Amino acid sequence: MVKRILDCKSSDLAGYQAREMLESMAASEGRVLMGECIGVTQPLLTDITNAEVVASMGADILLLNMFDVQEPVIQALPAVEKADTVREIKRLTGRMVAVNLEPVTDGGQEHDELWRMTEGRRATAENALRASEMGVDMILLTGNPGNGISNRAIIDSLRKIKNAVRDRVILAAGKMHAAGVLTEAAKDIISKEDIRAFREAGADVILLPAPGTVPGITMEYVRELVGYAHSLGALTITAIGTSQEGSDKDTIRQIALWCKMTGTDIHHIGDSGYVGMALPENIMTYSIAIRGIRHTYHRMAQSINR
Image (cartoon, rainbow, N blue to C red; front, side):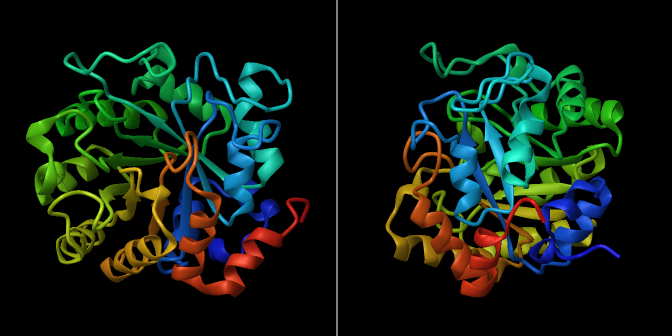
């Protein structure tokens, strides 16, 4: 019997396959929190990875952004073989781990050395297979600011990756901001047609901007898209990807409750409160808003050795 992710211990998650993880998230009725973090930047607490801090504040899923599956770097992680980077994060945190891969095409902005696109971050079948072999539980096809990620590119990459990994990992797709494509901004970021195309190409989960984070994205609009995704058998993630993860607590609570009202399954909070992760207090604030003190403290306090 699959448990709700709310009730899962580290040992439960270690025994789940992708399908069981999806069932566990769905059974939690909109009380799953995903925290995004960056490993290549200086960690907030210097000698502790940002992933560990995000986990300690109550996140159920750790989403690694700018993670290069060919040359993985997580600052402050104990020395391990490259192939064991993700497994070490899972050992230290006891959490599900997801990674962003980006279907980058020509036309993106130029970035400095730290932020430039690398081959191991591209959404290719080869990189997806490598991520799966590293122990990644979910691959999210999306785009960082300015990288020129279109919905068509996401669909094309998603189809190839699905054919390569099959059901070994959860596949998610969508955008939390325009990602450098101005014709896919505001309400044009994602439509029902895009959702259907993502689903047909193999997406298990659809990513949508959280209400109030992108101009024109209202609770009512996202609620309609969530309902449509659910009708196709997909789960949804509503995402804060516009640096509002660094807002005040009242803003975080408001966005969290709007997302709850849309009917979403997974709540995402981004990595740019401080560089590399949300404000730690905002992760906990978001968690408390969607599931209360009891479940939040339970997630924060539970030993990873259980």
